[in-house]
Each structure stands twice: as structure tokens, then as C-alpha cells.
Length: 192
Ligand code: AMP
Image (tube, rainbow, N blue to C red; front, top):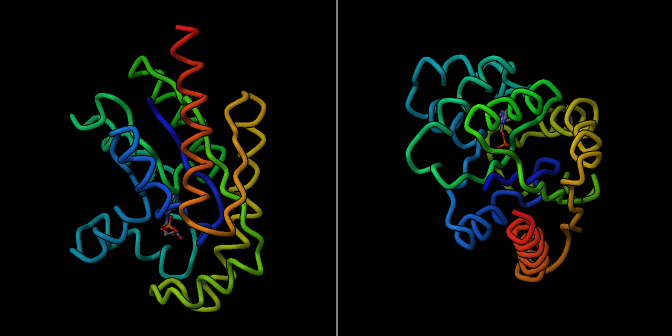
């Protein structure tokens, strides 16, 4: 089963992804984490990615798509995976659909974690990651609204999108997400 957790930077995707990944026993794949790991280890992918991530820009689709394609071929994804921070552009969303179709699979659901911009800016300025400086935060929010948010429609049209309000108690938000996904996956089982 393939799932996506979607939302602006700082919405709490990583935190909620941990719970979803444990609950469904599927790996949590964060493209941001993979880039950060490569940057830390100074790999060729890391050197290339850093040119974009440091300023809050998106890493090019070709590089990101190839990385995800590679990652979901790994044995631990035999039962599916939860993607966090991917897809982030229409091109990535289309390419992801193709990758899953090639594996004889498809996307089951997308959780859309909704958090207002004012709250995002406050959260990110407290987090202190190197790309959490004021200019990069502004840039990432701008990119989210201009390039990433449009894929909400792409998922909604296919009945895959589930909106969850991401402000409040972490455990309560997690319960809402898992209840929603349990219903979706249960319904899928009954139909298959
Ligand atoms: P994140 O941890 O998801 O906020 O990602 C951190 C940074 O990694 C982003 O600001 C981008 O520069 C880069 N990145 C992560 N995922 C993607 C993606 N799907 N497409 C392009 N760039 C990405």
C-alpha cells in the first residue's frame, strides 16, 4: 500500500509519518531526509542537492524522481511505502503514478495536513535546521503555494485526498489520520 503525507514545510509531516509507518508497517521515505543524509556524507547526490536545498529551492524533478524510483525498488518496499515530501510538483506526481503502475501498484490515499502560514513561520523559526533561516523559509513557503499546492487538485479529483487540520495535540491529530486511513484501507479490502 502506497501512501503520501502532504502539506507545507513544518506542518508536522515527519512526526505524523512515524506513526503511520509504524501502524501500517511500511517504510517512511522522506526525500528531504535522503537529501540531508547525502549532504552530510558529501556524496555526489548530496553535493548536487545542496545547491538547491540551502536556499529553499526544489531539487530538479529528474534527480528527485530517479532517487525515488530507486528507493521504492528496495526490498523493504515490497508491501508499499509512505512518502513524505514527495511528490512536490505536478511532474513528480505524474512520474510517481507511472512508477507505481510499473510495479503493478497504485496510490491508496493522500493525507493533506493543513496548517496556516503564520503558524508555519513560527514553527520553522524555532526548529533551527540550516534551511530554516528567514529567507529560505520564505522561499519554501512561496514554492509550496506556487508549485506544490496545485497537486492537491490532482489528488482530490481522483478521490485520494483526505484533509486533516494539523494544529493542536500531536496524538489527537495522529488518531484522526490513522482513523481516516483505516477506513480507506478497509474499504479497499472490501472492494478487492
Ligand atoms: P523537507 O525536509 O521535505 O522540507 O525537504 C527539505 C528540502 O529538500 C526542500 O526544501 C527541497 O530543497 C528538497 N526536497 C525535498 N523533497 C523534494 C522534492 N520532492 N522535490 C524537490 N526537492 C525536494
